[in-house]
Length: 249
Image (cartoon, rainbow, N blue to C red; front, side, top):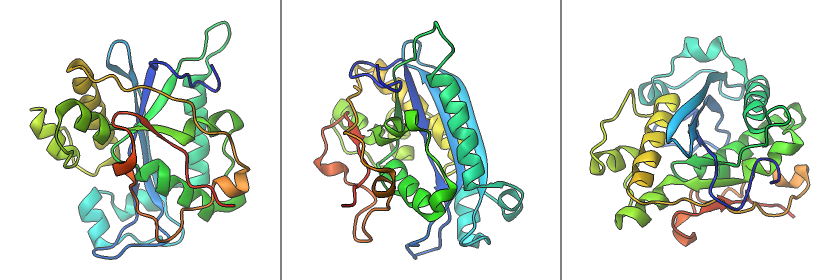
């Protein structure tokens, strides 16, 4: 076991689904996370055991667009009264470390992130960390954990033998009602967790593999090139975790 990650079936799935600043028909180069949610699922019982949810105050574009509020349900008052990203990220990491590294003699559980697509950890988090610069420190024992995830779309495609059409589409095919609001980050996490559990009950066995060797923080947390797509799922093995943010030389 290294940093709560092991190349076998995990003990915990950590579902993550960011919401970020957005404009209608415009791809923002300085997108910022405005909701940071997670749901932890016990991989043995397939039951949710913990949640984290926090709004985040954007700095580059502090006023949300009407489109963003309509899409996510997040209001200007909610982000204006929230902490900025470095403070929320610090709280999240402390929460996550408490789960992944319990006091001795309890062994650290094997865990892996689960996302709906690759955007959250391949694109958005590296971009946000780059925008914050030295104001954000990733705890060393979490660095490797943040570089490995399972894309639920690949698990769905492999298990159901059909293309994933988004979270709501996958829910419909599996006859699972949408709970809460689509594009509410915490509600999406809860629904992705339900998708994951249902797919496992139908025979899916998402596996965990080791993250690549660490690079220096200054290069590792650089954002992807502007031309990079927010998702590169087509070339990855179905059901396997997507490992590694883009490394800059």
